[in-house]
Length: 173
Image 1 (tube, rainbow, N blue to C red):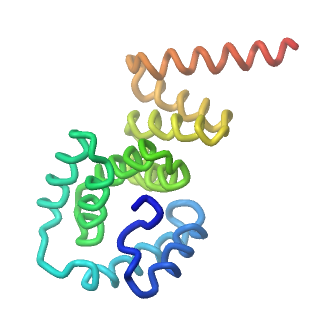
Image 2: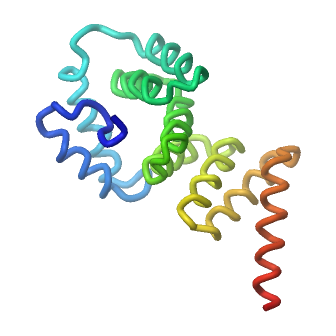
């Protein structure tokens, strides 16, 4: 299930997945093309009528229960239908992170941060993704942004202090 974004039986889905992998940063023309292609597929994906709100509610329920794969299914549907709830991107990124799909997590969280640059939790979550991808400079920068936005974020403060301490130790060698 984690190998496909939606349904592996959909004609042309492999091409769409390839497009997703090559879209570049959020906001690029290719990134917009990907989401446009997803909108065109939604009718094919949704055999029955769903409301975006119902999909988000059900997806969040599964997410909180720890059933990440089922949560992703409903959250994907909400995006395809056109939910105005941008938190869906955050929770999808978090779900991909939990599943160990760090590239996909980064992609969703980058889209979330582009939409909500002042949200500390998005910056903190992407710092965790960058750490898993061994992109320490970006992780440290995301932690700095988290602490700048929310100085009381204890875990971000601790992680940033550790990262800067390790950085200082490496510089002194």
